[in-house]
Length: 319
Ligand code: F6P
Image 1 (cartoon, helix red, strand yellow):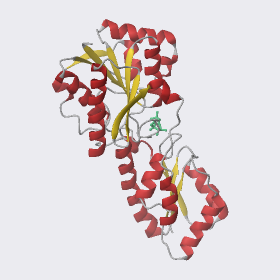
Image 2 (cartoon, helix red, strand yellow):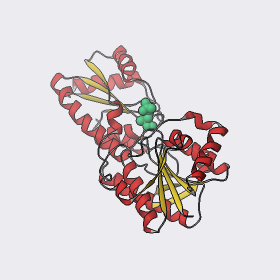
Image 3 (tube, rainbow, N blue to C red):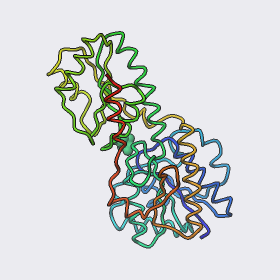
Image 4 (cartoon, helix red, strand yellow):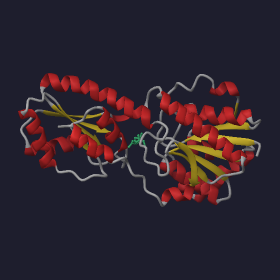
């Protein structure tokens, strides 16, 4: 192997740049060439591929977003697109590919390996919804962003004695809600992975009010329902002033935390080491603080589980 390709795909996540830097610098350390692919699988099919130098990845470890841009490209599900992508990689002399992204990106990487092309996946998504890794690149930054915003909302909630339903991202996963809700001192955390009872939640809010609590914070994972819908349901069972807030894409931006930069640096370097050993068709993870890898295909038979212990702990703390 002489040349490694690298791309980011799907929703961007803080720390993707740190991962690009790690792959590039580690590869160059071993004397490999590195090619960047812009705009994920869309750029791959279009041949938007360029050789990267050390300085291309200078001054990016601290930046959010991705210097290689990203795209959602469902068209890559078609075999013709996959074969065209491999043709482009071969044309540019790229021997193996590192894909940084989430679930959709892993599907693309799996298809490439099924055609005999070597790919390695790195988990880059704020959602933390990838199996065989405790944390994904970008999750920690997103959680910290959400906590900062909950703190701000709490100020105004207290001033006006209001209940706030705060909708956070995560797609079908409740990880951001669980972590940010716990760290933000939420009164209720609602996630797709745990049942809930709206009437009971409304009753809890009334009880807190009766006890003199000035604000109530409900953190709602987007995979459950929209914040406004949830607030309307709550109001059917209780008489309190409430507002809903959707935090949205602000959760995807910003400088990555030190934790995300370190995770990205470790995973990026490890991916290159694995390629150097001749491995491929695998996805890198961090399990119990150890770098691990699994066959990409195994990720689709395993389901990610959030840390529901946080749910139970928060129930006892939010009294
Ligand atoms: O997967 C990351 C994520 O931010 C999810 O949390 C969210 O549901 C989705 O992407 C939003 O996607 P888009 O940016 O394409 O609207």
